[in-house]
Length: 196
Image (cartoon, rainbow, N blue to C red; front, top):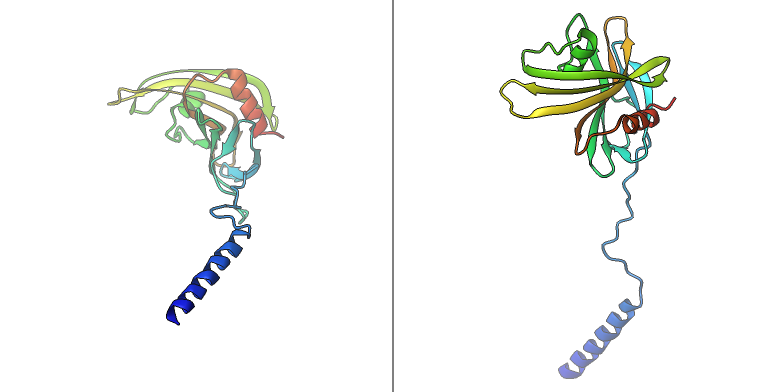
């Protein structure tokens, strides 16, 4: 009797497995897709000037979609192929005090004044475009810090702003790139990012 019961139970289990095989079961699928951030809200300067930035072609904002509506003060933009990254923010310059960025001192003062800078070379180029009536400049620069062997090769594209208590530059600093970025390429990224 026990053998017959065991055989009957085995047959029932075989048919139940066969029945499961007919169902469409997807294992390990993930329906959650990472949402692309198409635009971000930012503020800059002591007056917290609002600005909306748009995702340029070939790059993406390195942030998650922010649902609380609070604007960013700093954001990061990366190339789709990770060949460069850029920091978007307002860089202050007030009464001769920069924001620890040698290009800010260079733009306003004509030289990098930090004691940490051993050598500095730069040039300022007018990109021939404007944002909110302000001319957009490209600052290319190389510098070497004291006690560091590496020479930094960076550039910034942005415009000058003046607030009630401070002034500075608002734009994007390209701090890391595998190959030199052409002026036209930088101009294109800036134009899409800061589209009016």
